[in-house]
Image (cartoon, rainbow, N blue to C red; front, side, top):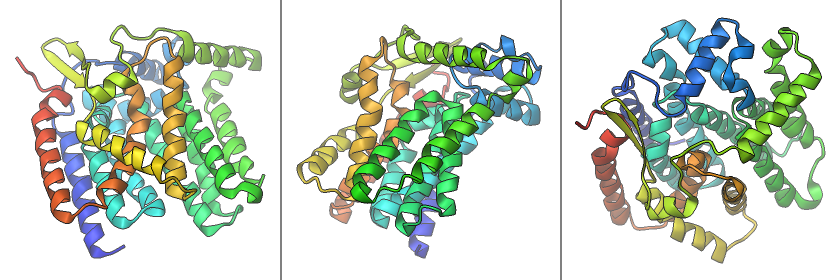
Length: 371
């Protein structure tokens, strides 16, 4: 990696960290699903696992991570949100490494820049929810998969690390199972007749064992395997049939910026909506990939990743733009690849405009009091 790349990626990450840190203690109460995860984390610290309502809606590794943060940094808004802050910022670096594995360094830098100014990524890096935690683990798993594919050794340690991080991601949020499906489809299509069944050990068996192991505190409370299976059934039904939110929106509305979701806490308000510099640029970028589709690694990953996480949203009873968090990196990947083909002066105009808009919108993302 050249010194130029090191300089720019360092600048992007430091700037992103600054804006994710700024007033991270605001608001001073629960916003969005912090109402679910923070109380669950406190109950885990008290050893009251059966009372943690998170048990039937998400795997509780995410709440356990928040609980560890509370134990170290205190029961306050900063203590709740530090894991999201650290892993959210860390996901930018991991994403850059992943992008470098499959596209040019120039495109990887632009893709990381876009992810750093994503409105949803910024919001989730500042609140105590598990979406950004599982995204960090999933991106890390993806990186190790591509490192292993590049080395073409099924027994490489990269596969083991990929399995571990897939396990951590699924143990944090069950939606991460779509990431496992994404990689399996990618490997089957890219390798075709050369697919090594050993890969299933790393991509399915290891994550499965880690997922079950994450429930060790639950089993130590005296619960049986049958009870655990019942919890998994309830978890699946909760994710696919329960209407979780009154503030609903759907994918078409996200692209059109037709509906802005906001959440009030006293005189604070957090807004959630798409960044048009990413979402609108993604449209021609994705069309270009489809029109000129070849079985290149980057094109295949982008198409599979996007549809694997998008299509299930159409089958949910109610949808919310926060469900788009795992879609943002692949959109940035496609948009960055497209942007890298343009002349430097147009790229500079685009980046300056994007930064200005981000700065203007930032108070709406950061819960800064508006009145």
